[in-house]
Image 1 (tube, one colour):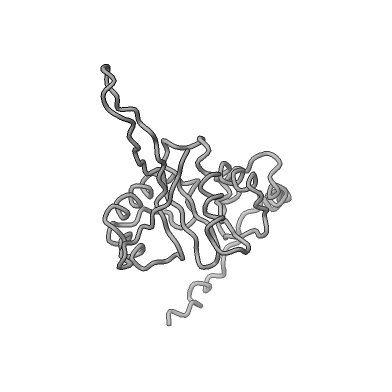
Image 2 (cartoon, helix red, strand yellow):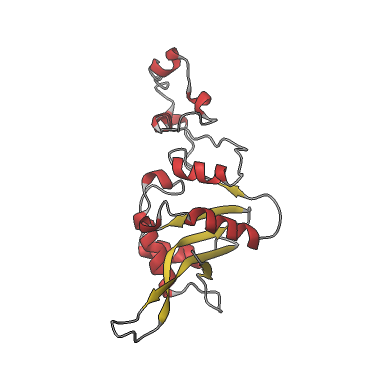
Amino acid sequence: MNISFESIYDREGKPTTLALAVLYSHLEQRAPDQNISHRSMPTWEQHAAFVGSKPYAAWHLVYDHVEVDNTDEDGKGYPQREYTCIGQVYFTRAREIGIQISDAYWRKGYGSEIITKLVEMVPRGPIFANVSPRNIASQKLFESLGFGVVQWTYRLDPVFFDEPLYQGHPAAASRELPADVKTAAPEEPPSDFFGMVDDD
């Protein structure tokens, strides 16, 4: 494994056509348990505008360099190095890591390598990772690299309580609501409740 990073922006600070296409394909691959930023697929125009706005302090495509033996039966040829894009990584101005690895490269140790390399590159200080409570593989990955849970982010959405956590996860206790709370029917709002909303 010999990974390297390549900025998605050219020397003029614009995203390259290749980077835009690769990043969009990554969005299409992203499973619901990996995503915490949006629930629907953005259009190409929305995607290009977002990437072009430079939302992160650093954003890179990740490549692995693989030596391929091109010699034929007669011993002619020579080893050649191929560069394969395996994913992406970014680092926000709030010192948060975001990482995505293409499906074909899951569970091969790339996650640890990418995060370790990025941590070595950025200025010294605390580093954070926001992970969906459904993304158990990422939770375990960051914990294996020494990251600790420092905050629960709350969302008003009943579906949250149906999202699985692995056995022994530190958040599991917070899911245990009293039986009367779990089964209680939601209260009906007052008849004039929605009329109280100020549209201005």
